[in-house]
Length: 146
Image (cartoon, rainbow, N blue to C red):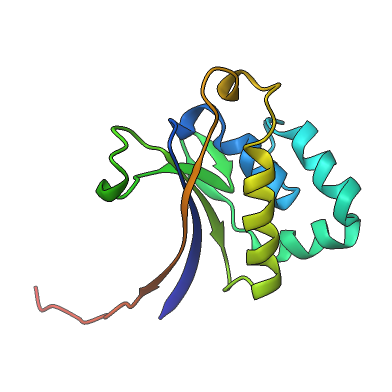
């Protein structure tokens, strides 16, 4: 049995424009392609290298669109009436602690206040909700006579 967790930030805007930057701002972690480096540095400056190291023990990279990445845009619940993928998902190996969840919640709100970014100039990103998804996978192996 395998259990994994996904922290989801539901917003009012298409997440494909900012999901990697938001993840870096919330966790201090970027993928190899470098998107979000500025935001990751802001995280490290505020919380220190030790907190980035802790996040690295929690955050899981997955293969998506030809890249190993810790985040993707995610389907937003219909109750928010967003017509596109307006949610950001961050993957975790283990359940994030209450402290880490609270840091990410606060950082998500701070991220929406940055009016210098192209995706946030005309209409501000609004946080609509947060979710922690637990996914448990089981595997049953059986021989089949051929």
